[in-house]
Amino acid sequence: MKLDLFERFLATHLPTATSFHPHYDKALSEMLLVGGKRFRPSLLLTVVEALQPALLESACWAAAAVEVLHTYSLIHDDLPVMDNAPMRRGHPTLHVTYDEVTAVLVGDALNTYAFELLAQAPLAPTTVVALVKELAKAGGVGGMVLGQAIDCHFTGHRLSYEELVLLHRKKTADLIAASLVMGGIIAGLSSESLESLRTFGLEAGLLFQIRDDLIDLLLSSEEAGKTTGHDGDKNSFVTLLGRDGALDAFEAQLKLVDDLLAKMPEQLSVALAQEIEPYRKLR
Image (cartoon, rainbow, N blue to C red):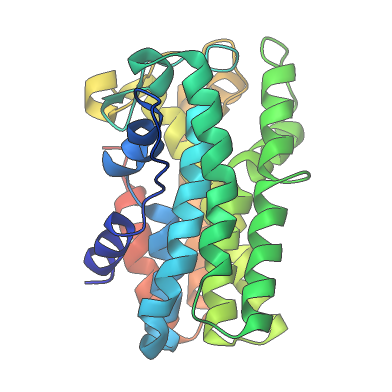
């Protein structure tokens, strides 16, 4: 139900910019419309639905902001200067369909549009400010962008396990954790409860990344819906630990996530366990 609500909201709040440009307006929403797992907005909405369901519609503004920011990061991640990936979400990447300039500018536009959405959220001003701060911190200077900078700079240079974990906490897990915390902010949770959600989100994000690295090894591009088999010179859990080591790390991380779930209030624990369920398997 919540994802149906989210998809309807997103479809009516897409970025638009009418002009005589031949494809910019279409490209703005293209990667949002081709779908995706919607993992991050779903986590945010799950927290709100479990704790304050009356706020679910209002929370869609924040959930959309998270998905828009995440989509910008994918568009930039796929650029020739970074991963040079031709496919994302089962769809050609924007630099393939159009050109590299369009992909860069659409990514820039979505980055800022995420905060335009948050600014319009029908929530208390103090809540909106807290949401803006949380999303900007996770997606910006010392969060996702730092992770991407480390990833790109050290491609072809083997990192230690601790450095690899830091890379992926920043590049992937910070935004996943922020999605949960943003849901908690909307639901009015205490600072202590928000930090518990953040801890869970960081560990769930690491689980998500180890699984993603294994998928790059085990699945074809068609099965995964994105380009696979291109992590050979990148710092991934598979390249560092090998196939069996990465599988062991995946199982250990899954146990850690389950242990954190068990410490949460039952209503929230059950709801988040359902969100994690699809990521317990590699196919």
